[in-house]
Length: 248
Image: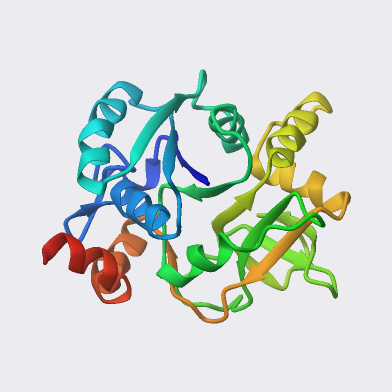
């Protein structure tokens, strides 16, 4: 199984801390390295990183990162990184055969989340999204979160930042099949901008978008200085397998 990490955006809300969001250190470890190490621990044998903003510098850092983490890393550059994140998914998925873990470079997770997510495949779904039922989780920024409404069987009925009703929040980790990139492409062809949520909603409409509840596990979207401060405080304790291996 491969993993795809989306690292193409500008990261405007972290610019006061770092000029490269994927390389922003959290307790001394770049966000992208945390994601690579977590994907490897969950069973990924190869990582594809979707690059865009400042692609040359990020891609130049990948060989050393691969050597440190002991896993093959390839880059998939997005032609226009200002486009929505679904374009990054399509660029990366074009380099992958079969199912893959899909992660955002600025999200970090308890190890159990990705390990369990990697086991969630099934013929009844085109994608499985990790969700947090704690919609009042104090670590979640409600103004930036992607919200999810599920049906009685745990499949997604609606997803987006502005949906009216929701019962969970998107954690930024997916087990994707080739159906996801196809759904994003179909949404673009139908006039949508091409966000990941556009593709997810298309699969939800076809009842092909499943969920996995994280059941209280820790995760964080490191998208602004407040979240970065929380990550610096909590990540070494919440991710001992990562920080212990690096610092030990």
